[in-house]
Amino acid sequence: MPMLSISPFNAIEEAGTAVLTLTEGLEKEEFLASRLTRAETRRQLRLMSAAALLLSPEIHALMVEIDWEGWRALDQRLAASGKAEDTLLWLAVRALAPDTLMWLRVYRKNQQKPAGML
Image 1: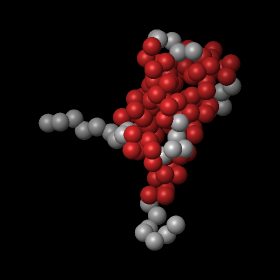
Image 2 (image 1 turned 90 degrees about the horizontal axis):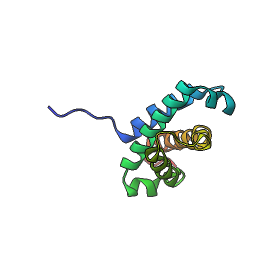
Image 3 (image 1 turned 60 degrees about the vertical axis):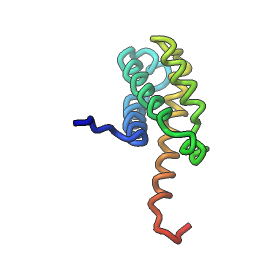
Image 4 (image 1 turned 90 degrees about the vertical axis):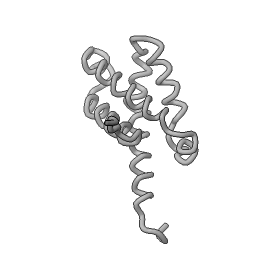
């Protein structure tokens, strides 16, 4: 029996929500000082970047507001070393992940509008 898999969109949303939850209310210094939070956040960001890269170039072209190149670069940097640069992680936590989640929600909401409505 084949294994059921989660859609890349759902994977991005779930991991992104985890990132936001893990880092909620933290300042950069607090985030960097917490080895466990930083490690789990890094893991969730890897899940987000892997899912983002699974989406087709056509999807990327339809959703130009999302920084797909940013996800590609993040994925490469996280894969290249066991410890990503702190600044890179913080940028992903404060900009890349929340912006991506916001645009996915906008896109999903627009897809649910009845035909004939703009």
